[in-house]
Image 1 (cartoon, rainbow, N blue to C red):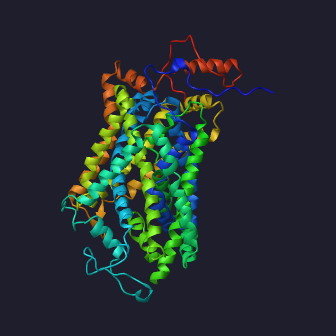
Image 2 (tube, rainbow, N blue to C red; image 1 turned 45 degrees about the vertical axis):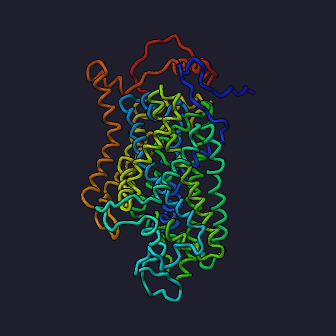
Length: 588
């Protein structure tokens, strides 16, 4: 029986001079960090509603198809890029395809904009957590100083009456203190401003010592949400009306499968849920040992993330069914998504339970840990991107992290004025817009069609000491880019300008600022490409050849020769070659 050869770590002669990259203490640190980043607010407030509104159980068909032929392959591709090149996105794509090196910068720009919004939500959650210690809970009653004459606390005996719920008025008039028009920017909401500062302090304290410290923080922040979800699940399914709510969630409407919107929503949710095309996944994988079985990890992380989304639907709709029965309304009248679900509807339902303060406290503690994981990954991805691009900053990474936190906090102040919610919506609407779907398309083109899909698969197979299954390459070459194009076209066809309230269009500046953000992130690809073409010597054809097709390294050439001499098996390192002449030839 042939002895199994040892998996391949990075040979000493292949480690770049001055490369002092950190590494995870344990593999579980990496897994929990990736799960903590991917599992966020959207798993709780977006997926359950999409499943309910797109055919219930039938929605799982397109969702799972997109997961297996687009989501998991993209997750595997990004993690493999980080682990093989041991760099964040800002530097890794330069090693893959210099002309499209800006793909990494576009990822980081999108991450920067999305991160600002995310921490603002974190500040709102902190406000609700503090308010959860009040008795009675302040979002359950009318007659408070922030309530209007339209406030109406509904119960089962007056189901035919209408008004604005106290939960909605608490969120809009007490927490946000919203103005009535986007043109009214108002003044700083000092309570949310202080909580935004507190949120950034907590984030910084969790990451300032690098992954050695944050990798231990996620032991709590990545696991606590599951404990709370399980508790809320068992409490929810025992409530009267829970069966009705779950029936709405899981009912199968097969006719929705013939609608393009259902498939588009499924694909869009996969992108939002897994967190691909933002950069932290590449960064986290760059701290792995090179021999780590990254393909297995990508599958596990993706399945856990999407399983969490599905399970969250049971937690949400069991309680919504109970709320509908309490108010004498159909579930369709109480269901919501986005901030309205977690800051108005769900807290209102928890407030009707015995021990309402306890349920509210653990619910918002869960949201804090969900937000903290994703915010930590955001800042770590950005700071590593800067230190990779400017190696002299590596020894000052703590200060880089502090500077980023302060800068993002200052920009976030625009979102916490009394008119800041309108600005928040612009950030949220356009930070993950069309560019969000174009970025993975450029990523696929750079890695698979210019660097070479077969070449990349061989390199990954060599370091993990096992050949990649053919389905990975089928997805990377054909199925995944096709699905990305479908989602991109769906988002373009269904685009409409940003609105507020009852679908009232924003003033001119809303869409103008949004498109500036969209074009600005896309310039992350365009400007570096133009710069590289200008500074590279040679004819136009020679420049494109040099910048599109990266020659094989000595490690790759040596490995190929050793593989040929060892009957096609992956031999152990080191790999050295006497060849010094490389051809600009893609391995597609």
